[in-house]
View 1 (cartoon, rainbow, N blue to C red):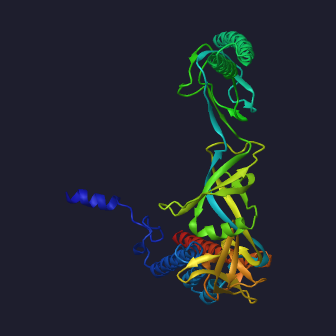
View 2: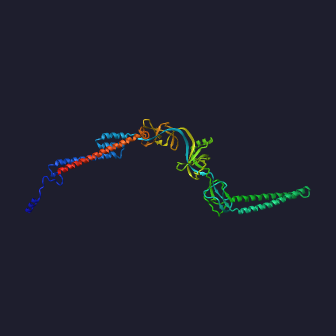
View 3: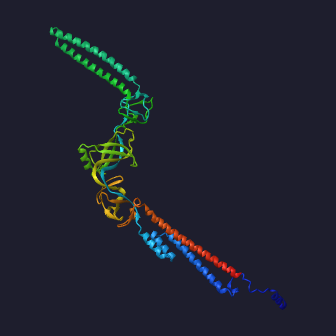
Length: 476
């Protein structure tokens, strides 16, 4: 055993002093250990500084919980060396003026318009019914056709009524002959009575017989007129001008005056009316205008209240107010030449009651509502805004009249007011298009900081490479 241990010790090669350690640790190089430790610490410090610089740049550019000023302040605290300059830039960005759009208050005419939801109602809606019984022979209209008053719509078999007419005419001829004979006899009896040849009673009886025949002739004539009217009724005509609907009965059916749905429905389209309601509070100004004989203009708009369909005039008012709703019905007439108004169609009506002269007008978007009521932001000459309470008059779509609070020529904010407060600074893009340079400067600051961060990162990378190179040379 002792010989084997000695043999293994003699065969183990000795490690030369200049051979580098495979682990690279400083324990195998006593002479070079302090320098390697210093280089290792310097490399770690450089990596930490580079990571802090990159983290500061990222926080400065992508700060999610602050505005432009807050982001600039965070970047200033992260970068350390340039903290003073960037902190000042952040404070300046925090006080930047807000971009808004403004409009100038003008003076003009403001119409007093009452808007309401109305229903298109035809002036005539007639269900055509047969006035006598018979077989429907022919139908002369097409569904949806426009017809005029008096146009023939259908024909009922007239032959039974023609036969009755001829029978009545024969009866009339017979009774007329009897009447003529009775009158001649009466004339003879009157001559004989004058000669005292007959009794007066016989003359009176003959006179009564003549009157009976006269009544019979009148009755026969009435029967003839009745049958002639039946022949007219057998030919069904349009009672009004309008549009026919769907046919309810086909030819060949036996029709009667008690037909449930009639033959067809005719709806008058030209002219046509719209019935709408308005509050009882508006009645005094409407009645005041109508009593002077003025025709109030009414315009009908489609369901979306954007497209004008037809213009007309107010025709009449209802004679009582609905107590359940506090409203009154009004009817407006429209000529409707293009048939844009259709029966039972829902439309938006605008009744022009009056026109205000020399009214102060601003866009409707300029008027805001708050705890103080309605107000606007008025732009001062130094490009700051002030809160101005206003009293609003009539509103006409995108225009609003101001009774008090704004003067003609003053500028009011119409867009961007949600970021404003009393005394806030503003910029108007239309007046100052060079305001984009501020954004360009901000982007330049972001670019500069990004470039400095990249430079710092590249410098740190170069430092790490330099230390690695020296460590390799020392190990070699």
